[in-house]
Image 1 (cartoon, helix red, strand yellow):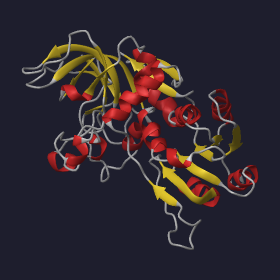
Image 2 (cartoon, helix red, strand yellow; image 1 turned 180 degrees about the vertical axis):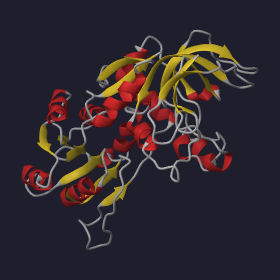
Image 3 (cartoon, one colour; image 1 turned 90 degrees about the vertical axis):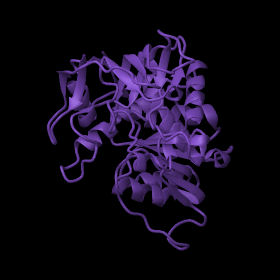
Image 4 (cartoon, helix red, strand yellow; image 1 turned 135 degrees about the vertical axis):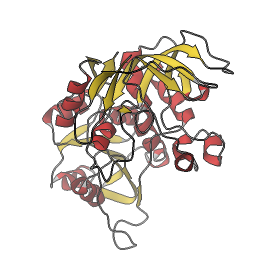
Length: 344
């Protein structure tokens, strides 16, 4: 079968021919109908040889949708040909967090060598992929796989981040989204669907600010040294109730810190790195900083219900598997509108 693999540190991924995998006991093989490209992929491919821990060659893709193609011994409850989405942050299934469906916070995944598809285990950028357990497959019925594959991360990750701040996002509150790209433009829709908050989007790209307006942002501003002051002016000096930072580099961390309100949430979703001051006098009283990761299995069900109700969608550009390296080049250059989806 064809697969897109990262094969050498610092070198672009390439489409290669590899053996089609056979499902072992408890495993499910799916024929991939759509796979999403993500900044996390670009992030790991940008690591140095000393930093890289994901194994080579690595079949990319942690967003995947397909149809059930073959069942391993002992697998029940699935039908051949059934359309399913793959839950990515897979855990042991037995620890306290996994028992609640929070496999994204599995206590033993690292110890047991469990890695998400495309981020250590073979991913969805291939004609077929193996899923280690049927519980990681969510039936999606007649939903379009190409239009909805990115919900497994680009929908689930912002949904999980926003859900924890919902009690604060009451009438009169303000939510700021920094970075209106692949995840950020979905976050704007989620905030509009789930809260009465005023939604403000910040980005360095004029095109992404236009997209933010199209998907429901009440206000858009350039993400620059003046953005915090603009938010303060817009809110009568109160600042933002919650800042969802899908970039999380030092300039956006500083901007978020400068615009957050008393009891506000600064939520770092992007994989950038930086530092923030802490302490009673270092920021507004009772403000918080948190860094959520992906989302739970039950939350993935909720995200797909929002899609089914027409309350959230992902802007996508479609590529064939042979064109997948170009999708990653576009992703790296920041020229995609929304999310890149690869169709084997």
